[in-house]
Image 1 (cartoon, rainbow, N blue to C red):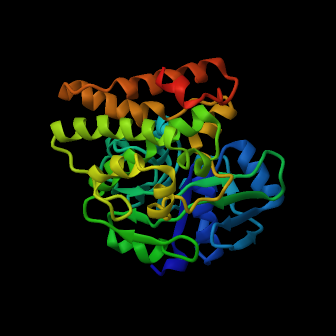
Image 2: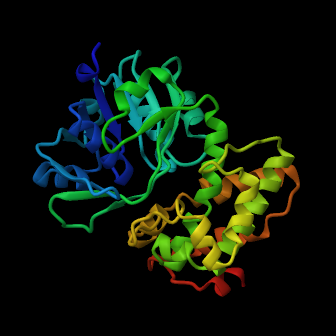
Length: 335
């Protein structure tokens, strides 16, 4: 079947899902968005605007979108799963109930275990791991059309060469990688910063530019690397850098960090993390699948992780209080 004839379902049309699906639809792919009613209404009413750090500004209308999984999944050839980690099992059950037996499912979620969770619920259906490295910002509620903005660089990685030609389109660079577990563990190290953006309330670029915050990130990564080493896990390189060198880079003085980490700081000035967005909207965060994953690993390996525990506890507290980002200082985080 030619690429243009394949039906791609975006299962979870949040920020990442809308950006990926928007780029694919703009390239002529046949895309169906499976979205929550609020997003489905917005896309049906105003269409979708897709912008990025490179200056692209494109819109698409009408958008094929539904909140009904039976309608969305019935004719899917490929399902790109972009739901939050906590909804993985639920989405697997929906795909199992409504999609064909030959559908190909790709996890584009954070964390390291979602492809396995999907496989557990999907039997013989092929499930592939993927990784989205970039940050996507969604417009404020009520903005028309709904806008998703890719605020940082990076190529999406998947483990199946056969799909790259279908998914690699303008604004969405896709390549294959033979060891997706290593890639996901490497991404997890970077994603430990999501909680610091959420706790500080700062834009990502401002937070990373402040050595006090970078020291906290470096400390978390040190704890994670110790647990990974004890568990015989080797994370992939991050932006061409060996994972073990990342804490050293983060600990550099601000002026030197700005010089040597230009790629890391190539971020839209207003970009924040999805965890910050979850706190702002009063939703559960993915702290359990990021810091929580490393804490579980550290506990099994017998390696200390006090900083990861502290950050996790602060995010859990903010979740309970439902006042958005607590706007903490670095000193308040380290106690």
